[in-house]
Image (tube, rainbow, N blue to C red; front, top):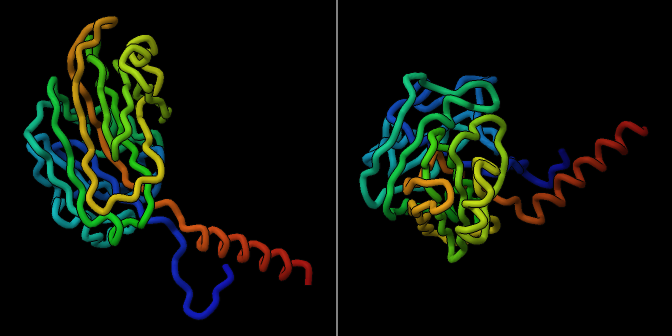
Length: 239
């Protein structure tokens, strides 16, 4: 990597939250045992009542390196949920991660604070949703004024992005994916809205959330530095 002055890491910050009452090793997935569409080796754990589990401090979540981020999360109301007896993640797919979730038939939200300092000025929000039972209902997600819908009753294998602009589209595309992604969000305080809607096509009223990831989008200058680093390596090999 090409450095000018002091070298600093160009890796984007990632904060990951697993909705469960347990977690692998106090929230730490061991090497080679990661999970997520954005693979992460450290997952904070949040119980159905909104409290931190397995040593998680909800006022100071840890990032993917295990370092304190200063980012906090609060949940507006306690939720129901189903939590598998298996603890931890299963390989890079993370089926055990996807079989733990919070569910609700009404509306509630997760509020994140300190994101610009703890993650980055611009970031993506990934919300995982797979309940694994029939008659689940439609989950409505709201982030920064944008709304996506997803109906997932069985898909817990490979991570597949979905999300529909209308409730009707979500009902007619059952199990089309198991996470939604909101791109290029820039709020320092972020409210993630979750609502379970009546599925008139497939039945059910419950919303499911398995986990949330906040992933920094690298600044253009960082991307440029990575490119310069690659050029430097090529030139060095040609000498």
